[in-house]
Length: 63
Image 1 (cartoon, helix red, strand yellow):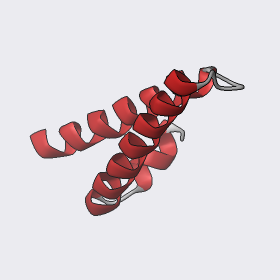
Image 2 (tube, rainbow, N blue to C red):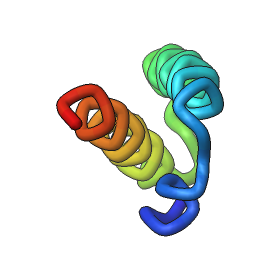
Image 3 (cartoon, rainbow, N blue to C red):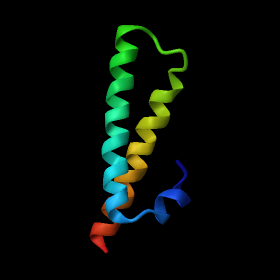
Image 4 (cartoon, rainbow, N blue to C red):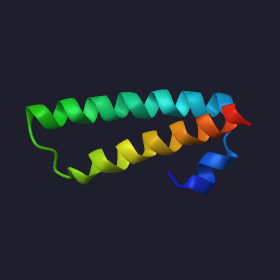
């Protein structure tokens, strides 16, 4: 998910997307611990998306 796409979302949508992405990251980590993922770069991508979403939420709370 690109930063420009994240900025277009409402705050409620951001919170929902953040919870979905965190769950997805947890599932990927668990799957990777059991048997290696075909594409382990997915972990990095999803983790960075979580950070992007959280950062945008924090920016909106500060303003």
